Length: 321
Ligand SMILES: Nc1nc2c(ncn2[C@@H]2O[C@H](COP(=O)(O)OP(=O)(O)OP(=O)(O)O)[C@@H](O)[C@H]2O)c(=O)[nH]1
Ligand SMILES: [Mg+2]
Image (cartoon, rainbow, N blue to C red; front, top):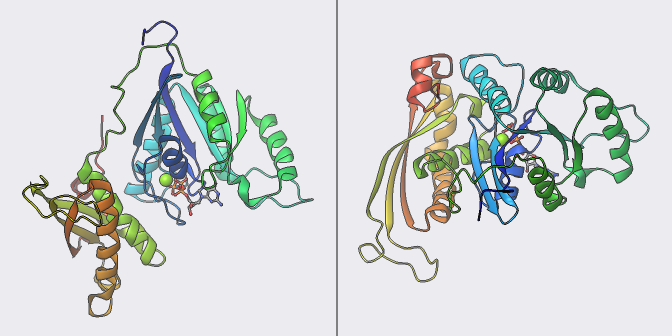
């Protein structure tokens, strides 16, 4: 493919927590690159997902939800999101249609107002993505679109459903339209910049988000410290004909929490909770690696890790370039 006329650039998914940014990234790339949960503040760092097609190459950047951050970890998350928006070619501002009621005036919440003010200051071309349209009647979208259009000169407005895969192709076409003309930035087979190890940590964290209640997930970090691939080659390890998994990868990971009481929750009665988390995470990791996986999890208390910068770095949330 020649460079002349080729479209290529960065598009950052920006929005409040829980609006479906990560679900959109996974849908756009067709791969599970980001974990998803019904709890806010699931994504903690930027996640790159590259889509290369005939029409062009787009590097999508999923970001943590923008919220009023308290604490070092949350402040870092919001900073990551806002700086990603500053550095991209196109902002995809994601809001959710969920909660819109008939006959009630549309109000823009404080969180979205704050993001809009940042977008105004940055002056980046921006598309408004209204996600979760599967949850509301179509007629409710029009007042929502009108309200937002009066606040900001969006280049385009796109109603989508990441979960039901509605409007995704239109979204792709629109994003490409707004990409600058440039040669491809990545090899055609490049999908993400995340290491397998990082993806594994996230898959374990996803199961903690899924199985544990309330505030616990916010105090949890996962660090893989053993990733033994010596038996990954199919001929060396066992191959399961039924599952199609080949070879064996041995993984050891620590789950960090901040208090003994939290450790008790993650471990559960007679270790039952940790066992459930481990079993479900192992299945997800096997799908990712297409290999049999031996997963050993250990829970460790690291007081106030989410407040301390050196601990944040140890958990892999350190400042990056
Ligand atoms: N009904 C419906 N639910 C959706 C849709 N997209 C995402 N969700 C759900 O919304 C919740 C949040 O999705 P995420 O993708 O984790 O949201 P996020 O914006 O990445 O959240 P943070 O990482 O916390 O900022 C999950 O329960 C998703 O399944 C959609 O199109 N329709
Ligand atoms: Mg997310």
